[in-house]
Image 1 (cartoon, rainbow, N blue to C red):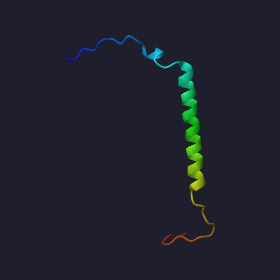
Image 2: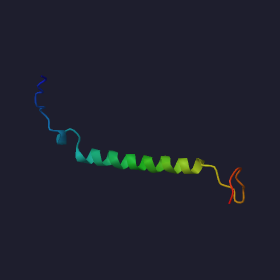
Image 3: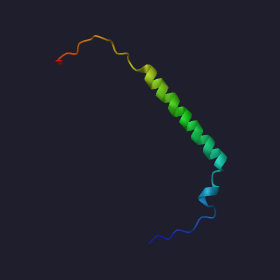
Image 4: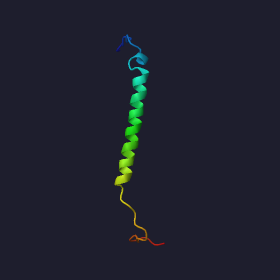
Length: 56
């Protein structure tokens, strides 16, 4: 049986809240940037193009 010793530093003191919040804001911004780039790279649909094998 493995017995773990308690850590000296509580998890809430490992990363200061200011850095944690800034990192979260950065990750959200990167997500928006990647989503925008993906939408910009999507091919445009052409109106009036008939699809093969599809009946109305």
